[in-house]
Amino acid sequence: MSQFKDHFSGHADLYREARPTYPDALFDWLAAQAPDRALAWDCGCGNGQASVALARHFDRVVATDPSANQIADAEPRANIDYRVEPAERSSLADASASLVTVAQALHWFDFAAFYAEVRRVLKPGGVFAAWAYAACGTGEAAIDGVIEHLYGDALTGPHWPQERAYVDAGYRTIPFPFAAIDAPEFPMIMRWNVDQLLAYLRSWSATQRYIKANGEDPVGIVEPDLRVAWGDPPRVREVCWQFHLLAGRV
Image (cartoon, rainbow, N blue to C red; front, side, top):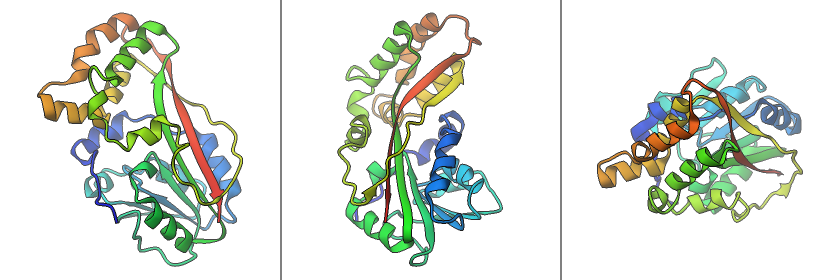
């Protein structure tokens, strides 16, 4: 089993507050695909963002993550059972879950070991779904150019973990051993002001790794240009992400 690579525990509070939310339509669709709504397992749950959304559709949700800090910051719900556990070795019973989800985390897992665990935990006809979001933008060249500069080789580029390549490839290069389910597109859009966007950029794992390596905040380097490009700070704009979903049935 691969060693847990913890890129987020050190800034769990920022991660919880600054991350975009997933589209409601995604969870409506997932619930409709599952054979029943008794139990969903949200694996690599982080701060529980997807877990809370699943809890609106399923009687019970087990949400697991190897980071105790992330679990401690997760939003509680009466029907969510948070557990500090690795993806590849859970405490769920055999054939107990109708749906297994992984939100923005599958690329960190040991694929072979995790997929064996998914097959063990899912009941017959159960559904597995994993998704990730990649580059974001506003559609305005001046703003998006600043974001791309931060993301690229000049600043945070060398500090992205190698697994990030799976996200940049839209999850197309990740092994997927299940019978694929055709899924609609799910637009992932937030309406943010410039300070909300800056907080999100600071929540990147590569931003935090850059800070540790260089002793300065790379977002602070591009912030003046981003604010100029944005204009009035309270102005709200649509920020859109490239959203990629893998879904299959056991």
